[in-house]
Image (cartoon, rainbow, N blue to C red; front, side, top):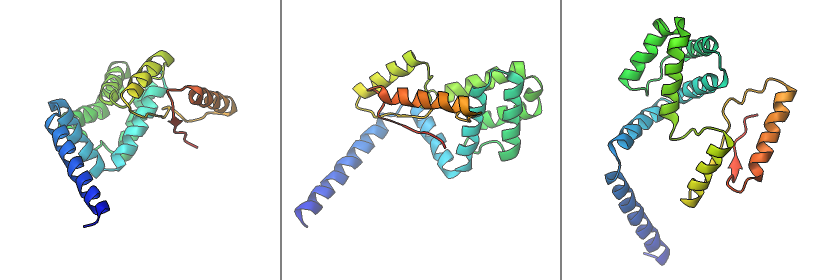
Length: 181
């Protein structure tokens, strides 16, 4: 065994030990999230559905419009398979009844999506975002900024988005961004 092979073997052993220890330290909530993410990976189309639902739900302030978009997305693609049994039931209830009462159902659906995505989707208000980015940078975590709701509705919106991205890149807390074209 060469010196390089020995270093590689030691690195593999160390990585395995760290991963095993990290798994031991997972909270019940983190274990639940991991199981859900594993289900998401086995159903890649679910990511498309969730992205569309989040994008549409956070874009408008009109409950009837949001209900219409969620209804369309779920009818077009189906209820995501990676959802828990309870969440699947709630989505089916939304399709059957909730969509007809958007002022009651939509705030609950949006709150649930915000809560479920709060570990990876952060409010874009500058103070909240900057505080989060500074905290994560201090922890040694590199962050990718991806503004949701990127459907550009015209030249004016496009110029506004461009200026937002350019300002983001001036910030020392932001190393890189994702842009849909």
